[in-house]
Length: 330
Image (tube, rainbow, N blue to C red; front, side):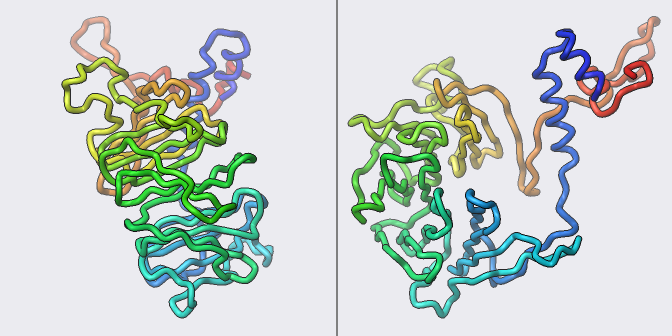
């Protein structure tokens, strides 16, 4: 570690090399927290989670059983090992419970007094956290797959909703109605996400293999359709102007809003420059074993000996002095 810091300070090494090495170390060290557990309330799979951004204390979960649970993540017992308890829930006996699977839950970005949920029952519901009653309900003609509220909006209260239809619908919390529709995709909308940098910029992902960036103020709407080939393939090629070679079922912006991460059924995750739509070619791969793999260099690489008939291995320079300093480094 100190070797990297010294080389960076002296200008002998690229700062990105240090950042990548440290990121790699952290990724490889990830493991489940053995001291913290969460009380089990759902009777079946959990589809969605959201931790409120104000205090980072309360978490919502939505399950395939239609149940929504609110957890308190704070360790009130002050014990090293503890279980996060459920504060309340919208159970099967609640009069406003979703009839089918809950696909997305999200806290209102500015306080914990309100949250939203959407479901396969073709509804988007706005909840009062204190009373656990619905403040408003938006009904749709198609199954709802995803919704999202802007975390930085100050001039609008729009909720973007992706449904089984090819149109993105924008619901206005102030008026209680759908304000307008974004058209351009050819199949169902599987994921939507507002930019955390610009309040009018929206990203959408579809089963048509495309990801689009929109400025919702513009009449034409669509700004960019992401192209995995960065325009280097002929428009006649089937994969031209597609983000993935399969359905795109997830996306999110980085916290600074400068990049967009997408995931598809082609077992790939791609990182995009959100300003110009360029594929950064940072590629990640996953598989059916539910693991996500980041491509990192081999720890040791083969080096031929002088007689060219034998080889020896040495530490890959990408990992050299990455985790600890040697005696020479001081």
